Image (cartoon, rainbow, N blue to C red; front, top):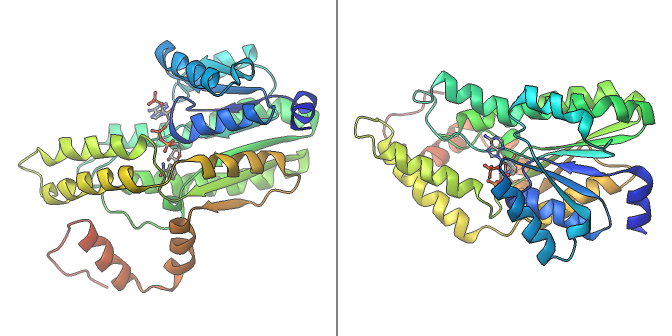
Length: 292
Ligand SMILES: NC(=O)c1ccc[n+]([C@@H]2O[C@H](COP(=O)([O-])OP(=O)(O)OC[C@H]3O[C@@H](n4cnc5c(N)ncnc54)[C@H](OP(=O)(O)O)[C@@H]3O)[C@@H](O)[C@H]2O)c1
């Protein structure tokens, strides 16, 4: 059934498909009969995706594309060689870990390029065919970090996901009349490579003896390793993404995970002085009173 539907309405594209949520999504799409294309940044990562697809018994429906979605000109140039996608899932992303004071302008721009501008570029490339067909789906992988700015040292990650939420809300209104639906996915913490990478960045920054945020970086390194150990696998996020593409009436946003649901439900009601104090304490940023 799913297979017939997929071949009738076309393939899906997932960006950042070699690990974590992207990899789990590609495998689930393929398992449900979709032709699943996935962008990766190197031939070695394409091999990882192919091997995972083979192990899952879906290699005939998984198609790696070596393309760095943060290279916007390369995306535009490559697009005509790709099939017309029924759905694109803008998943590739990372967290530029660092205090706002210490993140350079270049690092900040790179964070926005990958997490915010790239999804818009991919959507712009996919839209002409979707509009012509009068159907299509654009799925944006945001985060609970796009709803609540509660993680010190993650300012630019929060900014990128808040930006993605706003951009997606506007895009949804712009393209609804053409039969295209835009859906946001807002996961809490899940076990992928993202925390490991953030932890490594925290370790690097905590080695700088001159940094006034040294203790917080060290705490963040420990927290990242704890999250990596304890968080659930990303399958539930992948299932939600597949649902967002397959259902005829998707919600505008899907919170995924008990932590995301709890944070979204409580944050609007917790006074800032309370949530800031908890967040600063958790992040190892004690000392100096918050001014409210
Ligand atoms: N895991 C969570 O707890 C969580 C929670 C909320 C939202 N998210 C979001 O979920 C998405 C997927 O993350 P994940 O958790 O699955 O992490 P992941 O395992 O680290 O996977 C991230 C994917 O994005 C690609 N990527 C990373 N940096 C990139 C860059 N500079 N340019 C191009 N591609 C890049 C990676 O490719 P390379 O391997 O080549 O770097 C990889 O394919 C992200 O948008 C993230 O913000 C994750």
